[in-house]
Length: 222
Image (cartoon, rainbow, N blue to C red):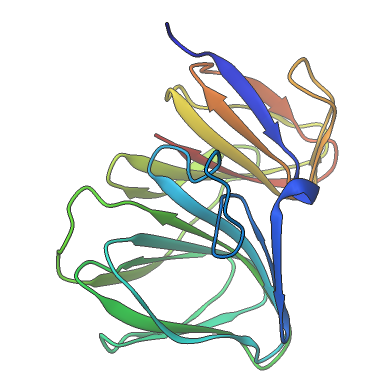
């Protein structure tokens, strides 16, 4: 029997990790926050909302067989990896690190102030491939969902909505809709959604949501 659902995940219910100069809210089970009923959604196995103080962050650490997509909401993030890539990621740029057979990288807030970024990890279509890296600019159009990146069968779209603006969500059968700033109005789906809240949608294509205030939505579809 086909499962049809719209599940609400409140940001205040997400798992929280704190450390020197940072805190992270995890959408899925991560590290010490083990929950066998919440390990992923489609190929999405990590969806972290990070906030780092100036100069703070994560020193060099390894990954393999993951597609790592980073979207900065405010501030700047300094990236370096063992394949020789070095970049400063700011709002309007999307970074994709394909860990493949293995790579190490570091992520630190820029020296000028704090940074907030959302990072997603996805399982790749193939394992053991050579590591790869890309960083590119994205031209968002106010009031529209714009494709930011496509990774295998997964697509990330972002919308920046003015107060009162509505947007129709995509047609794909699985959707993870994250309020990265602002809020959505009350609807037939739920009470208002605030910054950090999310929908997990299964087989409910073409739903419409409306911004209560200026709002940024991140929509992964599979």
